[in-house]
Image (tube, rainbow, N blue to C red; front, top):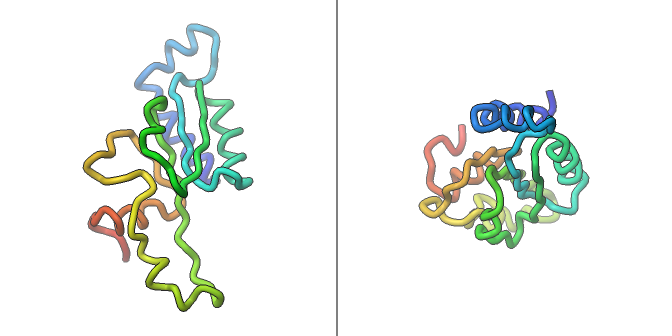
Length: 138
């Protein structure tokens, strides 16, 4: 099962409790939640998630992770954060300590974050580093 399928299954299970019956009664098979995907907005991966979620949920927006403004979540019900671990390559190995662990979160401070969020890629690891959560590595 691919990452898109796993994320959709998690979102769909949550959404069923919150209004899927109303969507079915109206003849719309899509679930009523509005999804905001935060990732590399111009990537083929983001386009695939937009298409996948678009056929299953009432609304889908895509936003770029770099420079993301958390106020952009006002119009969504669920955030999908796709945040890969920064690859250390021969070209950037001298910058290892600058690249990892991350210093800031694209979704802001932990205390201010209130949206239901699905984490993709290494988003759990990356957020645990920034927000000081237990279980960040191991």
